[in-house]
Image (tube, rainbow, N blue to C red; front, side):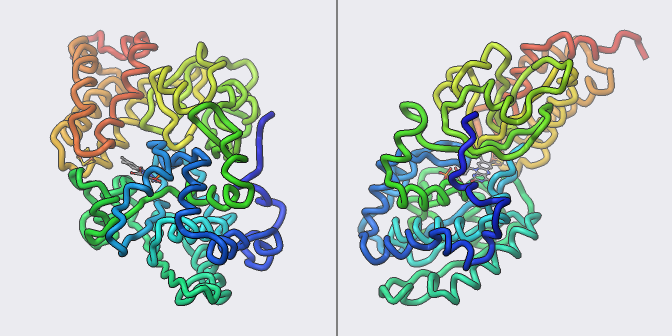
Length: 417
Ligand SMILES: Cc1cc2nc3c(=O)[nH]c(=O)nc-3n(C[C@H](O)[C@H](O)[C@H](O)COP(=O)(O)O)c2cc1C
Ligand code: SF4
């Protein structure tokens, strides 16, 4: 089984929340080494060479994203995205709670890598425990001289602001997050300009996911080649996959990218006895399903895109033959309709109407014309909105409507009322 322990090393074995324990295991050595022996551009080069891609959903190459920052503007910000609200995703708050110093060291390295003197972390409001654990880690790191003026006597100043969100999924979208950080409504911005040009308070900004930033620590410790040697041609390194649904041992599993889909199910204890696989939603609530014929596909960005889905945040939902796909599609659509910020008509209205129609099916009151409408409407929302939330409403519904039409047909009302 390809389960690996990189970011997850030591979790469950020792108390990594204790700064002394974290340091005994080599913690903060990379920060010290970077600040004393490396230029910030060396950190950027390492991120680029490693092939690390963003673990927050879009999979954008991290080093490349950093390189978009305009050189002539010295004020720039790093923002760590710990909003983690994608349905089925539970890796970032696990890292925050179990290994907060690794998350912190990753943020500090990222900030140094982009030449920033002020980093931010946006923590989902519901993560109270993670927030408290992280605040203690920040206090301990500050006392040890890793944050603040003249970090470790190197002359480099680095401030950190910890911000708690209030539980809106849309505040995970990077520009919604930046608005929220500025104290405005958490509504996505029109792009361009992208955050690299005009982000937080109008200044060049990089937004990176918790897991992305945490990987900077082992990448610097082992070298970018160590990371890029693992995975597939364009999907490099390791990834924490949040496996849930109809498996016997759901949980977070760290594996090399490219691990076959079948093995991910086996790692999580396999299906329940007597059950067969119906579908997998492989990349969070926003992704379309893949099916048993994809079991031997590698779990990587390219293969999942080829299969009509995506890797997203790495939330892997296994659905067996007892799944009610009408109810599942309704739940998924209802979530996105509820979380829509309402700025774009296709997202706001489309989500609402799909939810209304699907609710009729859930109650066994679907109409023949509804079925036709579901096919028609699901196809008029994607690509027409300000942000990717609008594009997230349809994929699951479309994929299960096509694959399991009989489940929808069975909910059509046959008796006139
Ligand atoms: C509706 C929506 C919600 C999102 N939520 C998150 C989130 O909770 N955490 C996250 O890291 N990225 C989230 N993203 C992606 C971010 O916009 C952004 O791409 C990411 O934080 C960049 O980090 P990365 O390059 O390290 O992946 C979300 C995107 C959308 C459209
Ligand atoms: S797509 Fe939806 S969530 Fe995104 S900005 Fe438009 S209305 Fe808001």
